Length: 380
Length: 256
Image (cartoon, rainbow over all chains, first blue to last red; front, side):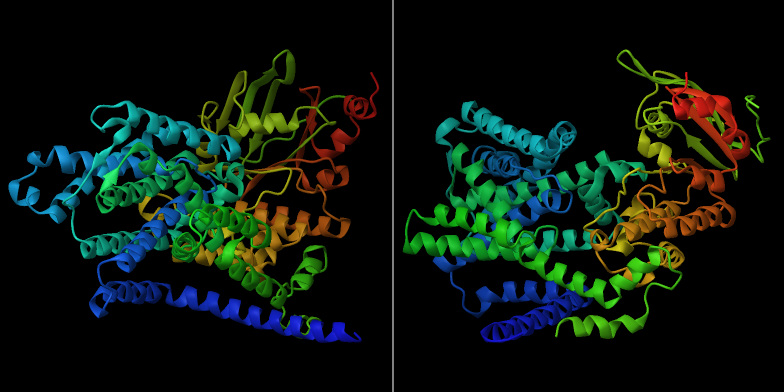
């Protein structure tokens, strides 16, 4: 330790320690106050229009941020938690979008007049169909594609997205390639609360599940499906269930989006670029976590819109760079990196070395408090 | 001396195969093998490389469908059962290469393996107190209690092996199939492993059927041994008899 390098080293060590302390505290806080955090965030979200967020550009922007957070979290449930990276998640978005579009525009007569007369009620009614249809479609598609793994699964899901897009383009009822124009939807504020409600509902469901045995099994399938089967898990059942839950929320948010967007066509409803975008959001935020994809969805969509405003047309270039940068520098994403740091601390605090030795033959118990000092000293 | 001797089973038969055969195309990997494992036994399965030991294990656990023959678990025909169904019904296997869930914490690795928490309601609930207690107790037993909040993939190979053993016990199997438990383990840990296997057998009443290449280890730990060569069962008996069996020596030394 001499010269300038020692200064750099000292600062690096200090930064390291600060990051470690932060990571541990953040993880501890998240574990203890997860539900409080969700509740407070939901209230803040609900309060924004009351305290001054007006209909217009910014309300739309925040609504879209909610939308992308739902998409990223849905993708992550199957892609990040279960280890099945889908490039066809947008298929369920499109199915939801077209279901509400068609029912809203062409079949409003089948609903009672009290419902049909109110755009919000009508949308809510058609959303039930959208969620149901997306979930059923996912069940059928899942039975086929969830037998594949890794790259084969990714390609198969992409194929399904493209196939459904083409079918939609050729059908009469969907309006063919030109799609459907949908005015007379609910107001911007109503949309805001719809997207917020969907996001909160999904966060609650995913967060709850991630602390149940169901959630543990999904992670087990991701880490080692062969082992999970050998331990008695009927993995097909769990994978399909996760896939269907993801499709349910994707379909619901898609169904809301078509009216929000006032226009739906095959290119935008089954948007392959969005599919890549929402994967990037989940990865950047931290896949396999609940908070990560939500933060990724918020942050990346906000960034994309800002870049589009400043350097129009460059947002996809930036998006691509962000994906590459994330995968190289932060393979676990922001939340994942924090988690990893906390886990590393835990390992060394409880004497990873001592435990290693004892498992290699010596008889001493694994977790002596005595190893604390040695690991503390290692940073100096 | 070359005669195959047989010890009397100590209890009811838990696992039985009759005439199990597995063909891969023209190759006969397992040929008409009968094996019987009685409750409370520790039974070894040895044989030269490529003898068909792992293939037999795969046929027993349902990972492969045997071409012919029958596999019975506690008298029930499980030949056509899926692998996960066999495991749920009390026959759990450990792999030759360590398989753990490396991105999950040690504790979750244990909890997700719990026999306690099965069924729809248990699935949609946080792990039960019973499962937590059992996980704590077993982690204490395998000496990993202090590492329970660590990601399993971060641990050393030896620690991961112990975790995998703990996970298998968490599933409360009647029969535990172990594929080369001593593989890659250093000599000082071997004795510890023998103790673990024995105490699981006696205190937790787990019947054990294990494949092993390490002769000292298998002779030490097994009550009875089956020997496979070229897919056929060539000998069975207590360790002393196997050590002196001509056909076994031939198979290992390559004499014809």
